[in-house]
Image 1 (tube, rainbow, N blue to C red):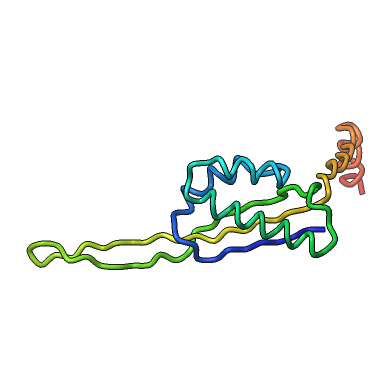
Image 2: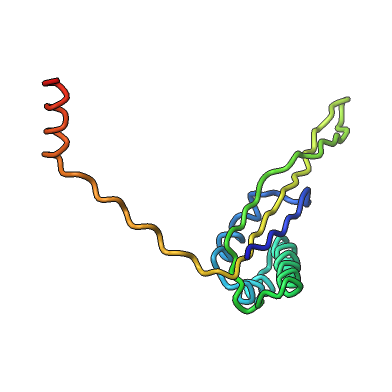
Length: 136
């Protein structure tokens, strides 16, 4: 069962959050929370709260929180807040306050093995088929 946790329009740059996501991706949710607790980054607190929320949702849906893994984590850039600051000599400096969206998917299923690749026909068989089409 997949559990989705979303956080829209959170202050901060998406560029600063993405390295944190790379660390916790495909980890056990409990271990990810422990590593986030020890991180000295502003986005780590926000992600900690999101994973904690996902674990509580899983508990309500009768899913074992011990088996949860972070299946997918994504951070997208949101619309910027545009502000102005007045400078000397009648100039105006533009200030852009960055925001981001975060999506976390927690799953209790382990990753399935990829399907076996189809066996390609031999090149001789392909060439024979091409010749027979030309003869017709």
